[in-house]
Amino acid sequence: MESPGTRFAQSLAAKDESSLRGLLAPDVDFRALTPGRPWEAADADGVLRAVFGSWFEPSDEIMDVLEVRDGEDVVDTHAVGYRFKVRNRGGTYLVEQQAYYRCDANGRIHHLRVLCSGYRPVD
Image (cartoon, rainbow, N blue to C red; front, side, top):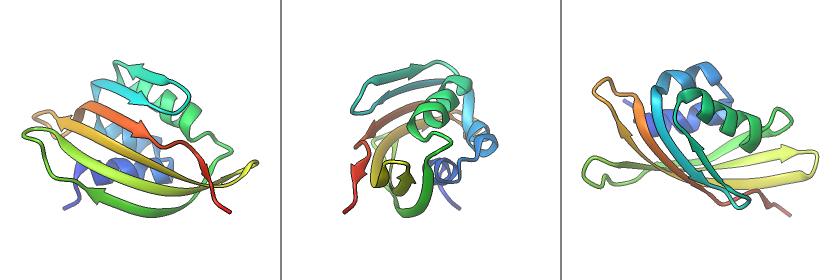
């Protein structure tokens, strides 16, 4: 059975808003850091606006999931890292993110922290 973190990464890569919403608790506590700015949200809608409205915009084509790896738990906190190959008007890029999350009693992600490498150009 795939972890919620792996399913989160796969939902991002597929740009599957419905699947991602199903993984997140409605009142998810979200914080993230990208090279350009910090992000915060207190609900699933805010997370979806960040990831599909800014991080991976409609013009960004996620061409390939190069890696998804579950890390070791830190007590009740789970880790997942993932790397995508992305193409847009500016070229082709690698994007890597590390996420730490906690799940509620229903298995939904209710606490989520993400750190992003940014879009790194591929020669």
